[in-house]
Image 1 (cartoon, rainbow, N blue to C red):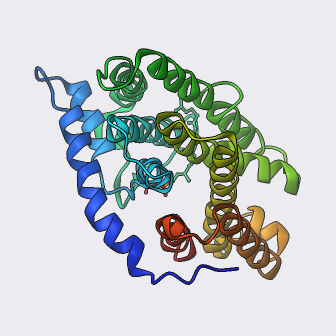
Image 2 (image 1 turned 120 degrees about the vertical axis):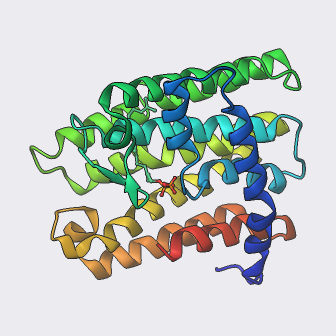
Length: 281
Ligand code: GRG
């Protein structure tokens, strides 16, 4: 079942919402005093990314029928975590990429030392801005910080990165690659959605639906990326599965995401979201 909403729904929504995210990120990273670390942080966060994760938080909040005070702040804190993960991922000891988003990666532009310090500072600042945001109830702040720390930590992004790096030496099974996809991408999508659930006091049933939605979205996102990389003859998941099987699996993930979110009026943005950001990759 694919949604019947016109595709301009999400385009209009993103056109309205993304500038709010960009302006807020800019504001959150305004240097109180000149600092080379802040410069590197701003370079990595304010670069030309798609802002999928903060937009997901806001889209899930809208799906749940409210835009709580502080939602934009939390959404932007999640983007800071994403930016930190990209800085670390590009380092010579990890993926060793000198380019990101069609320009120099952060360590290539600022040096490894400043890049690592910028990543650590972004992680700290993301937690600090949540801890100090007055519009969020203190107990909610603690739950959001706990959610994001767990997402980054030894059972989340960090584990995904470690398994991914280890699998370069020894080819991983299809199931292991799918796990890497989930841990490297899915967990932060899921956390972006869960953060909205916490702020909107979602019911367990609503939370289960958006977690299923974002889990499938994360898997679809990574598989599409692998399909786009098939030419490089690397042994990514799509190459291992074969292109047609990978295409089928990709569409299966999108359909599972659709099914989780349903076809109600307030699901229009989320359903379109999947197609806008994932189908075209
Ligand atoms: C301590 C935060 C932290 C992480 C440690 C380095 C690491 C462990 C994890 C790396 C995880 C990683 C970089 C996964 C790739 C995720 C991914 C799909 C990146 C691309 O996302 P897009 O397309 O990027 O949303 P843009 O550029 O649009 O923001």
